[in-house]
Image 1 (cartoon, rainbow, N blue to C red):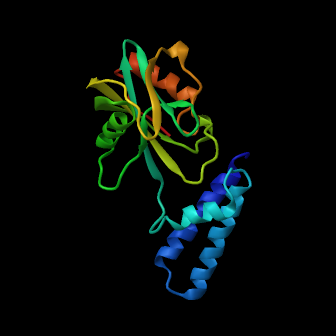
Image 2: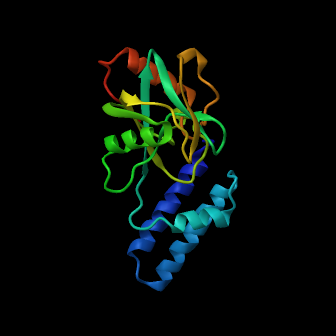
Length: 207
């Protein structure tokens, strides 16, 4: 029950966003705006952001509310996995990010890996599709509901580079994983990716 407040707040935001997308009655619009305000205040109680800042984020989302899609690339070399160091928090994660509109997920992960690490790859398998909010993943609270897609990516070429978002790209052995940016990836997911790497015949994980 510890995270139910986040689930409730996300559902309230989704109801408000969808309602604002389809409502024409000014009284209904006002009510949905109030619901959106309540959702922002709920999230602000356990966030580094203020309610007004969260509300501004909500207002940028229009149309029917659906989960966002985040892709992460698992790139292996000599039994080591590629991680990039985030400039935002100085912690490590799998290269990846949100899928752009009109972009297939496999192309999105290949693009993200290249932009954040400098390595050219090819997505060869969807290892896992996880609900970020599922309790077993233990991600910290976040303003949006997100589906996370983890792809096994074959290393083709390239060399490590820094980017606007990242300041290092390094391959790590399973016993040497550095401190992770747990908003993006958690230790249990890294462990699972190594297990899939050692068992290529395994089927895709989900939820």
